[in-house]
Amino acid sequence: MDLIESNEEPNINIEILDEYGNRLVGIVACQVWAGGSYCEATHDKEPWEYPLSIRMANTLGSYSVYVEDPSRSDQIGGLGLGTPEHPNAKLHTGFFLVFQRAIMP
Image (cartoon, rainbow, N blue to C red):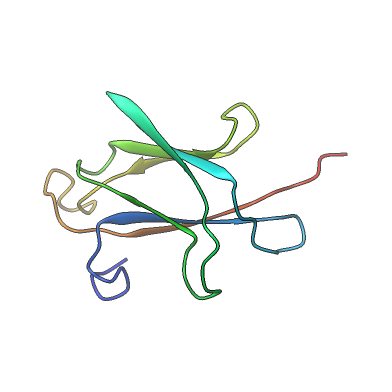
């Protein structure tokens, strides 16, 4: 995402949907890095806003994100500031992630 699309904020923006595509509020997402983690629940926001934004301060490859229980959620890794061309530069970068619940048979 470029600076205009990310609103110049170095954030991981998270949307969590149910199996029908409806927004879920109050679901916890966690950002994990080598030295720790941060978890927060999604908020009730306007439909065009992402219900959770988590700040980044470390370079590309530093963060992973999952929803609630890591044994039951996909985990997206390799996130952080920078670009593949400049992975060690703390360039403002924004990520927009959508997790959708699936019902397993």
